[in-house]
Length: 460
Image (cartoon, rainbow, N blue to C red):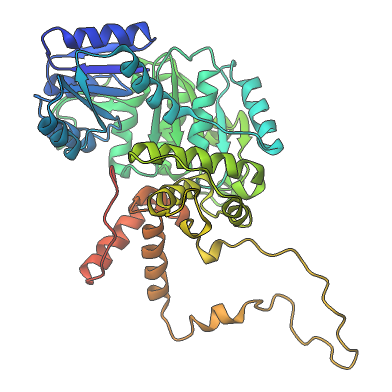
């Protein structure tokens, strides 16, 4: 855990830092938010920031978003200032902590952030085998490729491997290759010098340098542009990076974990991904099963998410009713664990009973699991089946689409998925199987056409 403390609070801020150090955190202190942004751009990464409410928290969070730095922010202030606390939360802080600091409260915050980033539930036999393989290869320096459908928990698995590795005390840096525009991804990975291009107002240390002595996760690496794939291959071979606008190579000591939701072997054959890079990244392959293939984990995962969002919203925790569990176990979960998480977030908010009732769990009809085959009575010999192989088994669903344009159907599917994901663009794009860039372009088009677009959730 890397904690960044920002501001001066009459010595209390250093007290909070000492407590965090005693709990095993690595602490860096910055005088103000401008210094903090400069430190972050120069490779002083952090997993959590505690910021004095007297600082410009709203501006700080906006700058973090502009620089694509993903880090929760906790506001803190001397005693309990309700007005300042509310303002900080409204500006994007996740929580407000009164000072002088309470050791148990600081420990709880650090534990909550760590748990949120790394919780893995794997009771199903299929998943146990996957975790067994991950634990076996974790101590090595081998590059790992984690594959599986969107939402199966590839980043959580990456963090699990890092925590079990010899690099566990080093940083874990994640880069979503699909969410960052192509023209910015090179700078994000390798860094740039001041003036290297329009908008480069200061030097920026890339993620590879930030991950030095630790692990870098290249999430959805298959979405990387072919030209950048060639540069990544060179970094892997030479173990050095060159910032944009510089001629000096910088040595980096990192372990690489990559993920993809594609069939990469087929993608390589189709020319979408370099074969030599694929072999470099795919030294060890870990395939995560879809949620529908590990049904004995569904109830435990659902309860974990229900408890998480009950606590986040200041609500009483609720057990999941047996009928609700049965309903969830017969659903195919096309969005996997990510869809389950969003479903339980919604359920805990709308539930009206002492236990989470079936009606609180809203599931897409398109994700219903197929019923088990039933033994139908034999057809009379005089009336043989005339249905050709591969004929539509649910003609009613098709008839409902007759007369509608492809673009109309696509629009409704995108909007409905976004509503199901509570406005989270990234989650919706993963469920739909499109890039976040494509989704945003579609939403901008619909907005121009006067369509009501669901509001974006925090951080989207």
